[in-house]
Length: 110
Length: 113
Image (tube, rainbow over all chains, first blue to last red; front, top):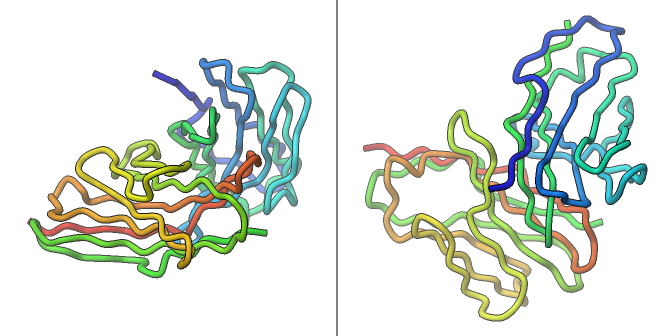
């Protein structure tokens, strides 16, 4: 079974802090994704990566950056957290179009 | 850019009722289509997928979906729902050859015993 793990289930940060969300997959997938999930808005793609050090902006990249130094790890960075970034963050890896999701990180920015 | 519409935001059914959740997408080329489900407190997981071939696709737990190309639709169906089907359901579209997947806004299904 594919396993996608995320570093934290719950995180509380203050406005202006730099926040790192980590995601690790164990299936050697080339493609990895970061989404945010908000009620009524579904999943919105923030960034994705199709190879080590390769990244592409999704639909809502503003205020976020990513890093992929190793194939199994994809990090999402909030350079200066703001309250409107309070959300559930989902990481996924994919193979042949099918996405495998992690458990999510519920981030609250106060 | 492609978009995905799920018209039903919240559906309430009694056990044994039949289910149909609508999904329409806007993209003119070849697409791969997916339904994902998120049970309360659990990960999103794949319910079924369509890549090519028979437009009627069967998935896990008795779910099926029909791809109607002329209507740009991929509706999810189940003949008889159970309380354990209570979850949020997401339709998703991937244009052929691309990695980016676009999700719909989701439909919350509540099944009353």
